[in-house]
Length: 436
Ligand SMILES: Cc1cc2nc3c(=O)[nH]c(=O)nc-3n(C[C@H](O)[C@H](O)[C@H](O)COP(=O)(O)OP(=O)(O)OC[C@H]3O[C@@H](n4cnc5c(N)ncnc54)[C@H](O)[C@@H]3O)c2cc1C
Image (cartoon, rainbow, N blue to C red):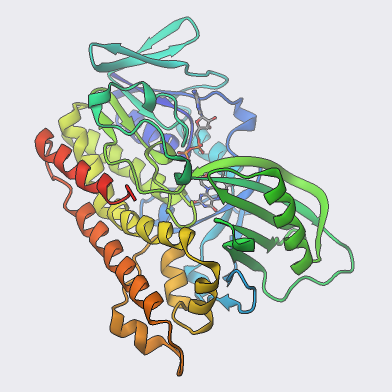
């Protein structure tokens, strides 16, 4: 029987490993460096419920999730606030990460060989083909290695240069985030809106948020692009506390700094004997770094491609990347163009766009869910409140929206079959979009 090794027990591995092993056609092993009881994160995160419903996967267990409340977006000046009004049935679920991971591990344990506290140190090669992994002095051979080891995967960097797989994200393609749940200050009222996101907080490239948790604690995030300097964190936390006086210094959960990719997906996710999935393939929504739904969708695509093609060859696996791009990747290419512009934009311009109604609920919802913002120059003018000008800014925004739509179109033109020459040419077009 052919062997598949997953490196990292992320959600993608848990879903795909179960499907592949249950088919009875593959011997599947998942190698995870953490102990089982410390798997994933000790907090809850927001997940589009379609991740489960559309893929026919079990919902998280009762009591391990709640329906998230609508975001309130706050531009840099903090003079305006925009609260979305997504109906409850369409809102994401805030799911406890560890119980969800354990639920999916238990579901797969009868068919998948899980090895916890097993750190993979590198890949092994037969010529240019990946043929297994190194765990200490041990060599574990496989017909396919699926890299689910996260944004900073070391394995990706070991692939041969001509595999076409990007080795590491650029500094500005990673979001460094402090995440903690702080005890509420007793007797101090919380702000009226519950899920408060500060865009370009204090004019810096990144966001902060303060979310009143149903537990009564305050869920705090301070994330900056590239790096989170101690001084930036102290300033941001102090400012958050000023506008949300219910945040105390006492941490009840979390309190860690993590890295999240915020860029377009890998332009090559498959190599001979190797597939990247989840954060290691940069499958997050570039605007906000959510990646659970995308990685679960990708896992279902990967398992389906392998099982229907009954092949682990790079030509066969290319279809996995094609289907992922058509489902999410091409749109995320467009969102990445817009995100880069927003990060570089003058905070005063962002305030103006919010205050004059150019950026409204619909646009914020699209950006947060990884969809393209489709506005023509005519639409931009039509949305503008009477008397407002800043023509150069509107032209710039129009230009970036057109570039964003073009990026998504290029993404959708991904070569549909494994033709190396066409793939390399397409990759060059993709990467050129982000060179500036
Ligand atoms: C603070 C924070 C908030 C987030 N909020 C959200 C949110 O609200 N919604 C959302 O959808 N997403 C969110 N995300 C992103 C989300 O966690 C990921 O996109 C998603 O879980 C997919 O990650 P992954 O499984 O690919 O990688 P990871 O979750 O990074 O998992 C990688 C796994 O590989 C293991 N590993 C790494 N290296 C090795 C090795 N060498 N050998 C063996 N094992 C290894 C790690 O221990 C880990 O278990 C958030 C992330 C962070 C950090």
